[in-house]
Amino acid sequence: MAIQTENAALVSVLEDKATLLRIHSIRSTSEAGSGHPTSCASAAEIVSALFFSVMRYDPADPTNPASDVFVLSKGHAAPILYAAWAEAGFLKIEDLMSLRKITSDLEGHPTPRLPFVDVATGSLGQGLSVGVGMALNAKYVDRSDQRIYVLIGDGESAEGSVWEAAEVASYYKLNNLCATIDINRLGQSQPTMLQHDIETYQERWRAFGWLPIPVDGHSIPELLEAFDSAARAADRPTVILARTLKGKGIAIAEDREGWHGKALKKGEESETAIRALEGRLNGTPARWTPNLPPAGSMRRETAAPVSLPNPSYAPGEQVATREAFGAALAALGQADPRVVWAPRWEWRPRARSRLSPLSPASSPARMISSASQLSAIPISSWPGRTPGFRSEKTGRRRWAWRTWP
Ligand SMILES: Cc1ncc(C[n+]2csc(CCOP(=O)(O)OP(=O)(O)O)c2C)c(N)n1
Ligand SMILES: [Mg+2]
Image 1 (spheres, rainbow, N blue to C red):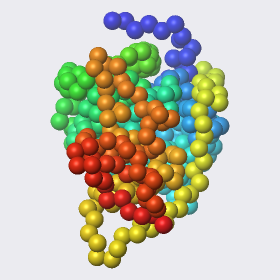
Image 2: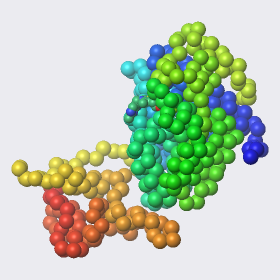
Image 3: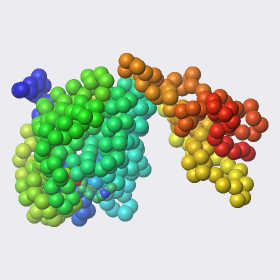
Image 4: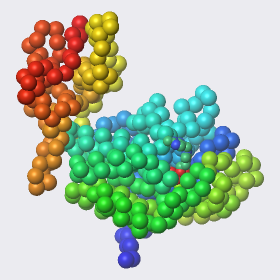
């Protein structure tokens, strides 16, 4: 099917942004003498389409809670994330040259010390789980139209944790979640198991309840159309299966083994690659206006530190780790409005695919349970105790709630 776009000018701008993202990624890693330029290069059009057309965010206000969220699950491609925020205007282009310096926050992998990073990534396989949590929160707690985008490596997608997250996402019908897999055929030291077998990727994601959309990951029009279809998916998360080439646009490295995690040598090697890329610029002026999130639609909760007293376990008393962990979470949930906790049954999809949304106002004051036979009966009247639960079966308090002085 021929993909048509009405907006050739937009495509031209996004292509140039992708080229600039490649150039910044090469230059900053070469300056650092380390990093992953080829992992950045394969994702350049994906990141360009997201940051400069698809996502709603304010480059001047990266912590705006109404913004769409981008999780770079393949965290080793951090230079392209920093390059995107520089092209968006939040970072200075020259700041990118501090990549991986001990005095710089632009670490080799993103950390939440940066205001535009919500979660540290780099330990592969975790970003989709985080995205699922954010999408659950947006859809059922905040009830906002915020969208969550997660970029995953193809080698990374072999991690079991990715598939655990995938099944949860479709179970909860997270149509506000959109993953993109950068299928560049190569992992760290060798080709991936599936290489460019997009058909098999498609079958697997469909079997997990997702809407898979295969695209040429270097085609801006195909990417824009795919992200648009993802935003219209009514009842399931979307995965964009982007067929790409690792090192795309870097002649000595494109689609070649042996280039993972290697910077181009500063000087002739990197300058040759940059010159070739500069020659591909369409030359369109960088006209770009951000797609701002809806103003004032979300509360902004402060990130003030919360301190809690120690729980009063008696010396020698034995408490199961999971119970102590649950009690600590519950106490945090009472002390900090940003910690949301709810009985699991409130999240269960109802028959006929109507989801039962969590209603923070009507839910029994911030309670959590891990056992389905528990009924949420607050026993906060107990002197000096946090709310707990009674078992419907035995009538006994089920959780080892302790006194919090
Ligand atoms: C849990 C975990 N295991 C191993 C690594 C080391 N590692 C860093 S990048 C990489 C290869 C990733 O390949 P892929 O997901 O295909 O990403 P690409 O660089 O090709 O985009 C590996 C194995 C890691 N960061 N985290
Ligand atoms: Mg790969």
